[in-house]
View (cartoon, rainbow over the protein chains, first blue to last red):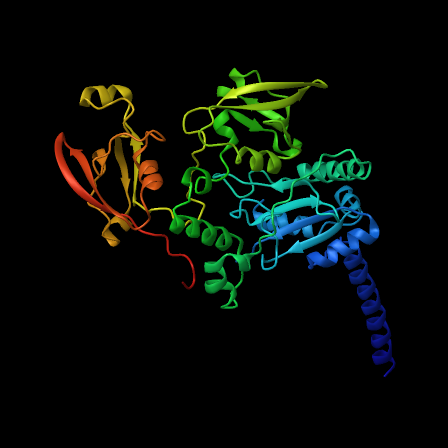
Length: 58
Length: 360
C-alpha cells in the first residue's frame, strides 16, 4: 500500500508538471481568430492592424 | 519548405520569437474558405493556396504577402521576408494613422454568392467555396458572355523572371540578379524594387499583383527602385509574349487541353520551309499517352504543325499551343495542317475541357 500511495504521489506530481508544461507550451504560440468580422472589431477596439491569412485547403 | 510547412511555421509562431513579437502587434485572422469574403477587396491570384494581407480596421490594405510561380507554390514564401513585411506593415499602420497614405479606391463588394454558376453548383450544394473554384467559375462565366481576355485572365500573374529579374527572396524585393530587359534598362543586383508604373510596392506579392494589372498589349513598364538610398526609375521594354506563363499548376476549365508539347521553329527553319517568319509553326516534341486515351489526335513526335484551321499567324504568339489556348474554346475540334517527314498531311485535333470540379 505505501508503494501504491508513493506511486500515486509521484504520478500526480509528474502529471502536474506535464500539464503545466503543456499549458506553457500552448501559451507560447500566437493566437489566431477564425472570423473576419471579429478581427475587424478587435482591430477597431485595439487600434492594431490586421494580419490576415487565406488558407485554401481543398 | 512546402506550403503546408510554411503555413504551420507561421500559424504556430512562438510568442517569444522576433516574428512572434511582431505578430502580437497585429490582430491575427485565418480564413479557410471564401464564403462571405469580399472578393473585390481581397483580390489575389486564387491559385495560391496560401496568401496574406496586412490591412486595418477601415479595410485599407497596406500590402499583400505571397505569390507563386510555375517552379513552386513557395518560390516567394520565406520566413525572413515575412518578418520584413510584418515590420513594414507596422510602419504603414503608423503612416496611415498620421494621415500620410494615399486614398484607396474601393470597388463594389462582390461575394462568392454573386457568381451565379458558383452559387448554383457549389454554395447551394453546401460544398466548400475553394479559392480556385471561385476564379474558375468567374472566368467561365466571362467565356460564356464572350468577355474573357485569356491573355490577362487565363495567363494570370506573369513571371517576373521573364524580365530578367531574380529576387533575393529572404530580403523581399531586393534584386539578386538582373539580366535581359531589366539589365538593359539599368536595374542591377542589389537594387530594391519600389514601384511599378508609379504604384508603390513593398513585397513580391504587391509587385506580382500590380504587374498582373499591366495591359497585355503594353510594350514597356516603369519600374522604380532604390539604390544606395537614392530612388531611380527605369523604363523596361517588355519582351514579346511577356505575359505568357506555364499553366500546368493551374486548373482552368477554359484552357483547351491539347495533349502534346511543341517547340517553335527557328527563323531559319521557317525560311527553309517558305513559312512567314511571324508564323506560329512548331515542332511536336512530346505526345502523351492521354492523346491516345482521349482520342485527341494522331500527332507524332517530329511532326511540324504549320497551321490551325487554316491560320498560320497570330499577332499574340508564335507558339502553336499558345495560339490554340488563346483562340479556341476548350473542347473544340480543329484541323491541323502538318508536315510529317516532309510530306504534307491534314489531321484533326479534338481538345478537351478540364474536368476537375467534383460536381457540375
